Image 1 (cartoon, protein in one colour):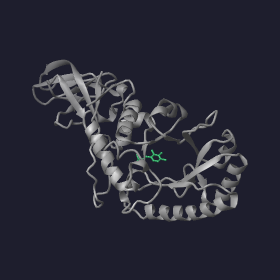
Image 2: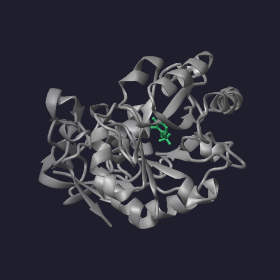
Image 3: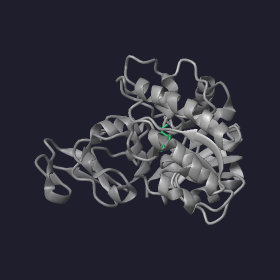
Image 4: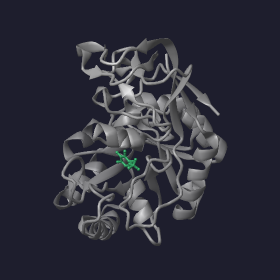
Amino acid sequence: MAYITINKNNFFNNLDIIAKQTKSVDKIALVLKDNAYGHGLLEMAKLAKEYGITKAVVRTNEEAKSIDNFFEYILVLSDIPKQKSKKVRYTINGLNSIDKFPVGTKVELKVDTGMHRNGVAISELKEAFLKIKKANLELEAVFTHHRNADELTSEWFWQNDNFKFVKEESISLSKEFGFKNFRFHSSNSASLFRCNNFYEDMARVGIAAYGCLKLPNSLNQANLKPVLSLYASKISSKELKAGQRVGYGGNYQVSEDSIASNYNFGYGDGFLRVCSNNYKTPQDIKLIGRVSMDNSSFLSGDDELLVFNDAREVAIFAQTISYEVLTSLKADIKREIV
Ligand SMILES: *Cc1c(COP(=O)(O)O)cnc(C)c1O
């Protein structure tokens, strides 16, 4: 099987840059959902702790449990616990989930400021506070999520304005309902790097930490470095004669006599099949024929193949985003920290 390397220096370089932007390591909440964007949940949790990160964000209770020892604060984006926890905070994604949380659960209220996916509507804020009070939950934060912070439209500003209004409303409602002070956060990676002067209580940072943030060209590009590389080993080599066709469907024909090899990774490991016939590695080695389940052919005789060291490059070939390239990588691929 293929293997993944995690570049610790690059990860720490990215965290240095992010901490400059948030102005404090303590304001970084590292997003570790979906197996830490395919990097490996435990591997990345360990490294983050070593760096001094104290906060993490995950999707499920299960993920939260497995990294409980590494952080002081964990935010679960989409799950409801059986019992309350000291460390773990749970997201309220809608009014009708509020009475499902155990009494005393620490919760954070997600507000829909324009994405129209999860979160209570701005018009429902008061009802949400009322229900949280009635359900005896500990409200610790109010937050929102941007729908296109990574694109140059006015929408980022529009959502910021909406969230500003949410903050003012929340502060006055918190007085009315006798809540303690709580925190506000709205930034993902792209949003954080668009802030000239970050002032919120925390930023939820995923893709920037993994070094694959993609900002519009006109914005200041941070010197982030990709953390994950995928390597594969050769299974066998072949001399192909001009005109021979390779792989399922035989839909790649070599134009001249060539050496081709088959490497031990495929779509079964999470490498996207749309890369068939068109992908080129960072060393300009061409993928030929269709990606199979357990193997893929390249125009190379090398024993080891660097498949990619920047998921954004694969994303271009696959017409998708680096997030999908990374999270597709199966959890059972060996991950090694280098
Ligand atoms: C995934 C996620 C993030 C992280 O987004 P990046 O673009 O990877 O920084 C932040 N907040 C929420 C609510 C998310 O679901």
